[in-house]
Length: 139
Image (tube, rainbow, N blue to C red):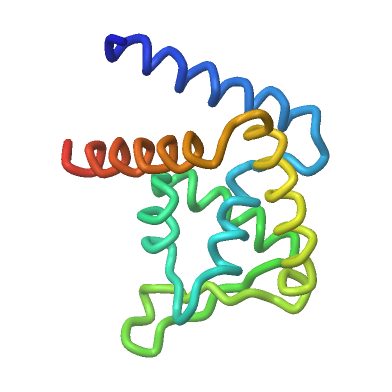
């Protein structure tokens, strides 16, 4: 299969997920992905960490973090080492949502992978990780 075929499929998958999330109350938007990342992270987390881990542009990360802040799920505090950097801190409200968010994401993943064998899922995961590595080396 040629590269443009793969790009077309990735685009269709991305568009399909976005379209379904527009209708779904538990859509996996950038804010939920960021919140999921923050809930699973250990130690101090800054916006740059979010950008790098989720391949978000700074403006997208800023928007997602502002929405989480507005919703009372995070707050930011200046770093002890450099006050220009703001450490992202989860609120009790965010921590209370952890189980619900994990269930929602797990349900979406189960729906997407129904009828696909474990070996194929592992192969897909490995291919996606390699593609992300390739994207990172393009810079």
